[in-house]
Image 1 (cartoon, rainbow, N blue to C red):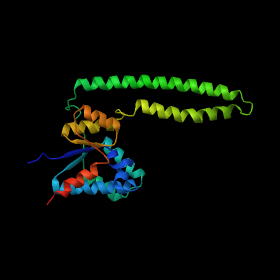
Image 2: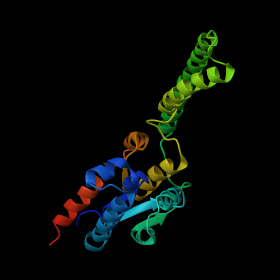
Image 3: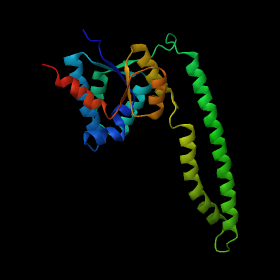
Image 4: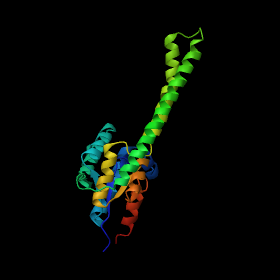
Length: 222
């Protein structure tokens, strides 16, 4: 008898833009409703279970859906078909090598972030000096013009350096811990979650592929 399939869902498994594009829908309500219906069918017909870390990822997902004004029945489906569970953080064993790699990666990112900050300060000072030479601009106009150019650029570079491709939140970590505890596949659309799922030897399913995987399973039910 084949091993029971379990999946551990990140918030992005239901809310990411790539999921809506893959399903050909425009709203989060439509994509979430469609995926939850597939999860329900897979649960009833194939005993496939989909889990969500509680309360971290669950609260993040519900907050997201409420901000999008999703109907109450969508929230009910979340509560019905996604199994809420808190990872057993005291019992799950993680190799020390993983912690070593994570700290090393974090240190490199911090150093890169410092260099980006230093460059942004230099560029801001230089632009401010150049604009201050113009008699057509007053002090506030100079500051606003410089900041409007540099802050957005700095934020994007800093975010890319420190957050893209790594674990940057407790919910991200909970997804991996729960998946490891349950021997479940991780479903997400997050580079950091995918990278560290691979390092932990966990199965990983891209969020945009997940609905079609469920449909394939269901297509073989007699």
